[in-house]
Amino acid sequence: MYDFDAFLDETREHVNRALTAVLDDYLTGVDEWLTEPIRYACEGGGKRFRAILFLASYEVSGRAPDHRVSRLATALEIVHAYSLVHDDLPCMDDDDWRRGRPTCHRAFGAERATIAAAAMVPLASWVVAEEARAMGLPAAESAVLVAELSEAAGPQGMVGGQVLDLISEGQAVTGDELVEIHRRKTGALIRAAARLGGRVGRLTPPILQAVTDYGERVGLAFQIADDVLDEEGTTASLGKDAHSDRELGKATYPGVFGMERARAEARRLADEAIAALRRAAIASPALEGLAIHVVERES
Image (cartoon, rainbow, N blue to C red; front, side, top):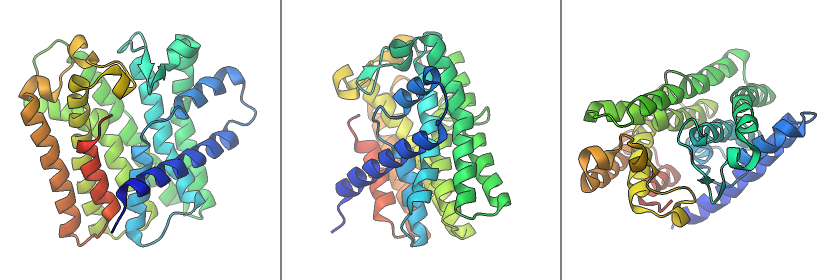
């Protein structure tokens, strides 16, 4: 019987080790004024969901990821960590806690946190390009990987979603507008994690499309589940300030649709993600388990 919890714990620890090694290598010779907040942001725990999803998608190829594949996967965590640092800044959501610790700007000041986060985006692209080269991927394929990550993280993806999230504070939004915020703010990078893992694994176009469809649905389900947790959780259980979305007047699924419909929608999307895999005859207990985990997690 497949032990999903063991897979999750072991892969998370594997990603943590790879991330530490990547930061050791790529930050060599950089002043501590910059490296300390970068390390603090990247190595402060977390679910490592995006890198784990990348690796599970890669494994659809039938191959186990080696250390180079794992190192490339950490680029997704670096981008995600950057987004959390900027989200928490006083000029943004002004949060004091993240992953059970003071947020990066509380630990190092807003100036260092802001510059560190800005450095993490090109750092992630550098990691993708260098690790892909070290794996022997052709330059054209490496360029596609960097382009997909950049698109998911940039104005058409995560940053664009953050903009929509900010300008919608205190405003009435429609269901379609809310979906667009969530698809870009959180969903784009999760979708990219699934796609990039599949690309590195050289999945065939039909299988890659199924993995993409899966990632699209899981990404949206992830943010809906976050909205629910923000309403129901505590600061202690979440490791960050609870109920902050409501206090900031953010557009959320519970706020627009109600709690029960939000829960049902997250579960429906997880089921659709699994169905996308099965239609393509993809047998992946890891990916199916991740879809269920997204909506059943407690933090």
